[in-house]
Length: 211
Image 1: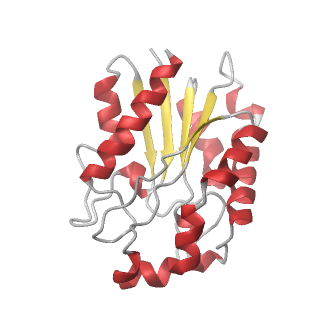
Image 2: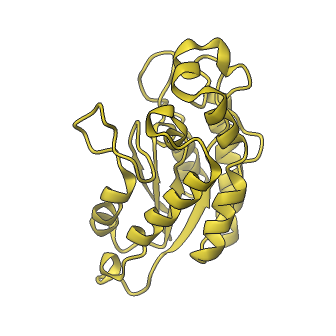
């Protein structure tokens, strides 16, 4: 049995762009069905970033500031899956560059790998970095997404594998590229039902390597 923590944003939470509610068959639930002996721990928060605090919200969505608390809450853990980066590509953070994604993950991992987070664990859990889903190719047809991300944000997510793989190597983490998995057409940001199935399929295959 493995205790696996999924730490991510609205796509980990399972946000349904059509209803504003939560997909019952989100990818984490599909993974739980595939590995019923494992304990799948969901920590998805809409709007969560790697290292930025939303200037227009009093709620803390800066993943670097809350990862230590979450790790201590759920320890001991065998594996921590990180699925962040989409919200960091928003214009509001002024970070539409690959170097900002690299630096953001570096800062995040600095907090996540603090030995104090695992002092009640027999060993430090493994970490798996996963690239964020790409925006839908027709993102510009959705005004809200076009305003929040723009062409720069779109391109940043198109090329996220390179900086995240670099950070995975630096921090000795495992890495999974979601490749051409994209958000649904409705809002161009969030996974639709098909997208959740695609992510689940890739993660189930990857998690099988830990057996």
